[in-house]
Amino acid sequence: HSGCRKPRNSLFHVCNGASVKIHKMRCPLFFAFLTLLVLNHADIPEKRVLVLIENVFVRDSHSMFFKFLKDRGYHLVYKYADDASLDLKHLGEYLYQHVIIFAPSVREFGGNIDVKKLTRFVDEGGNILVAGSPDIGEAIKDFGSECGIEFDDEKTAVIDHMNYDVMDEGKHNLIIVGPENVANIPVITGKVTKPLLYRGIGIASNPANPLVINVLHASDTAYSHSPDTPINNYPNTVGRNTQLITGLQARNDARVLFVGSLDFFSDEFFLSGAVHSQTNKSYDVSGNRELSENLALWTFKENGVLRVSSIHHNKVGEKDPRREYTIKDDIIFSIDIEMKGLDGAWKPFVADDVQVELIRIDPFIRRTLPHKGNKYEVQMKLPDVYGVFKLVVDYHRTGYTHLFTSNQISVRPFTHTQYERFIISAYPYYASAISMMAGVSVFSFVYLYLRDDKLKAE
Image (cartoon, rainbow, N blue to C red; front, side, top):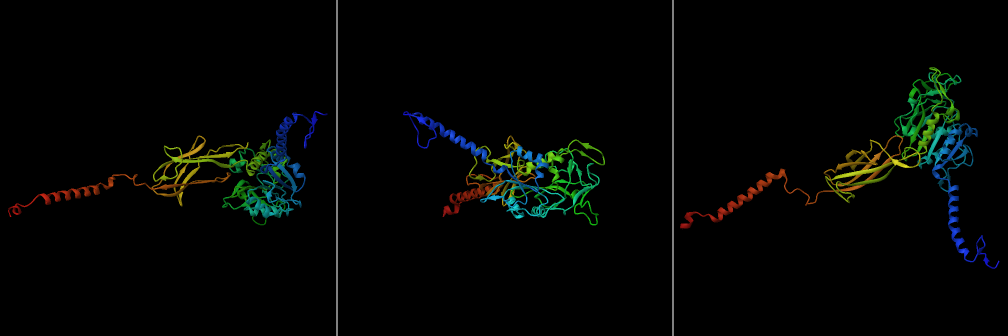
């Protein structure tokens, strides 16, 4: 065809001037297609989760919990806990943001994963959810020890002869835990109103550890021991000291959750009702699903994450911050604090215990910040001390990420034109000086202009 030609590196035959138009159309279409391809195949790091299981049946028996995570947009990568190809990093970068360990009986992790690698993963900001069972292995126990918690011995279980379900097999280890035993920390647990089913191992931790959170504990009548052997020694944990779910928020805000029962997340416990064996009080469904979902959201940092969006300080009557302030100035300090919502949007965080401190080595002023509109704001008077100060907001509450911000300001003394000209306390000195000057003037006048008559006659 004489009127057509085939441009070099072109996939289409074009005719005369039509080639220019087609090339212009192809460029944006090509980049749009490339963008969609990248978005569809790229995994968001915050949504990648490594799920370590001990057998394939765990995927089916805990499908409702895994489906909840998938519906939240998480990309779950299932692998056996002893798989020889396991690795958390590739080319120095972490492949996963979160790890779920549903392999309580594993003795040793496979591949390039061990307790030290998991601990380093937490130290570098990763989050881990761990489930145990009476058949707990050394790998899980060692990792728990690294995080400040201690699982009971293997083959032991939490037993409660007064609070167990009617479906119990006679060992009284399928216990019912009331919602009052859940920690009153809504940002972690939500609002649990139904009893919980629990069949698993007991957990102990040091109550003096400020990083460990006792999320769920057993009743006063519970204890941890082997259900198949007689009790010859005092149990390791008794009553409320028997923890069932324990959380850890590290100093870098990484989160680790330990649950002593793998069955706690199972479809069976999610759908099962609860019937108290002693009171025959029945419930259509347990609270396991509700609590498990809230715990997962907190562990994977979808809840309880705070940030500072803006900070401002200025002198009263002005709008812009000063390079330096003067002692005794009245200043206004304001800060905007936001919390990440479940939809991923940042929303204003409202609390009545946020404080600001004016520090120069030690705090000079500490004020509670009232919430006004979408920000916290307070007015304060600077001290009668000059130097370099810091306006510090250090907000550390259980369940929330640590919020810390520091702003440096300079405070100078008065200039010579700013001091008062007449001070009331100095009036006696003013009077003495004036009287002295008046006396000298009168004496000089008398001495100079008044003479004796005898001297005149001579």
